[in-house]
Amino acid sequence: MNLRGVFIEDTFAEAFTMRVARIIITARNERWAREAALKLTGFATSVIGCKCEAGIERLLGSGDTPDGRPGVSILFMTMGKDDMGKRLIERIGQTVLTCPTTACYDGLPGVPDRVGVGSALRFFGDGFQASKVIAGERFWRIPVMEGEFLVQEKFGMQKGVGGGNFLILARGADAALAAAEAAADVMSSRTGVILPFPGGVVRSGSKVGSRRIKSMIASTNDAFCPTLRAVTASALPDGVNSVLEIVINGTDADAIAGAMRVGIDAACQEGVVSITAGNYGGKLGPHHFHLRKIMAAEAPA
Amino acid sequence: MSDGLRARLRAPLPARADLGDVLSTPWATLGAAELARRPVAVEGHGALTVGDLFDLGGEPQGRIRFEGDLAEADRLGARLSEGEVIVEGNLGREAGLGMTGGELIVRGSAGPQAGARMRRGLVVIAGSAGSHAGAGMIAGTVIVFGGIGAAAGLWSKRGSLVALGSVTVPPTYRYACTYQPVHLRVTFTHLQSRHGLPVEDRHLMGFYRRYSGDLADLGKGEILAWTPE
Image (cartoon, rainbow over all chains, first blue to last red; front, side, top):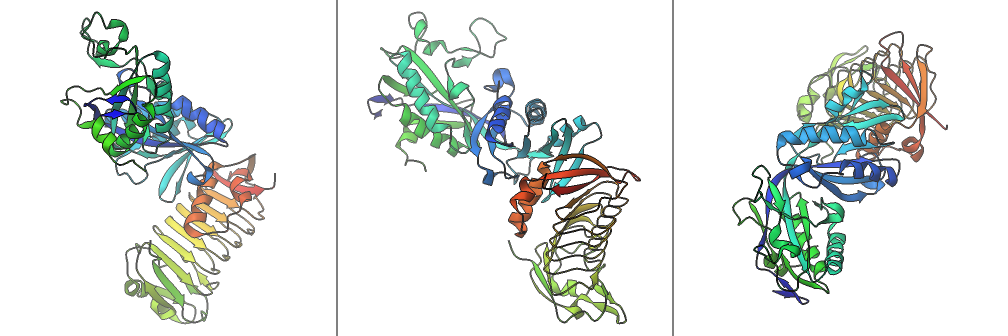
């Protein structure tokens, strides 16, 4: 398959089932909602080293939030159920509770699997905290120096998908970066997906394990490193001098497939040789995103 | 969502009526016929039933709407624990007395002791409230759009009495600060979208004087009095 001169490999991205929560942060204005969101989602690129993966899903207008203020929707993902509560409590406690004017709400209200967050953070109130039940949901009011921090008692958690990906193989670093930026731009505002890496782009794709250190669970993907072409079993076609990866997490496989389609389409531009994807032979992750099947599908809405 | 049950007053109440037992035990899944059998005491008329006074219709969906002048109807919503109760007009004394949950929305005014001794839940009075609104509250929220009579929130332990109109704060409450409580924004947004109440921007975005009390009791309650700043 060839798209505007870019070869689409006959391969697939292999993704894993994760747990996902949707967090709504609101604030007096967009600036402070963003500040809290950026801190909350900071250092959350990969479960390999961060214990969670998170990113901004989209900005919310004042008409779309529980308190009528501007907000940010975040998708927050962990590998297991138990991790979710721990990570949310420590991150919301350190980054949203601390941020001026913010409040924090559950963005998956209809989901039956719920994890306590406000129920733990309330203890920061040292006995002065108070709860309110509004429309059947309990919230905690925690007194802080600025006023009050309002946080929902429980957050919904459901199965999601992590590790959707594609790789952009380009003639040079400038072309790879331009293509990756174009892809990230069109993918990052789609509902149901996040791109957890910096600017949505990964330069350090990894393989499972290490050739030399047994305790390492991941190490550089030498087959796609242009500088190692001469000394390793390279997977790079001739003329490729730079590779960037886009990693996509989402609430479900369809959301990821839709985002991959528009992302790959945007990445097929001057200087890009081919698009491929990372997998482990199909034996590890239950979700397989076949690039050619995705690109042959009808354009998603 | 269905509009739930509808209870339309057949004729003006002949005397003061005690509706305290109408919603005091689980009712949200009861049909009109079952609810019609619940007792109502009317002064000088002995024991009647809901069905004697009201035309009931609709489907049980955790929601009931009362229509007609209920200014002489007392204790509606007493010990309410669930569901949404909407009163289209005025209501008598002790509305929502000792509630433990649910929502009581009065589109008119309410007599004395609205929300008194409630433990949980939400009472909203779109008009004015008589004396002792929220008196002896253990927890929960009472919101009054109009003015509130004397002794507001007296002896409350916890809970919130929100005054959007005039209120005289008892001397056993102490002023804390003037701020914008976010939880009120969530509540008002809910009241606006779910019940179509006339929430104004000044309520949503305005400032409130917070008084802690009743300091003659536990003192963990509050009166939040809207202020133009």
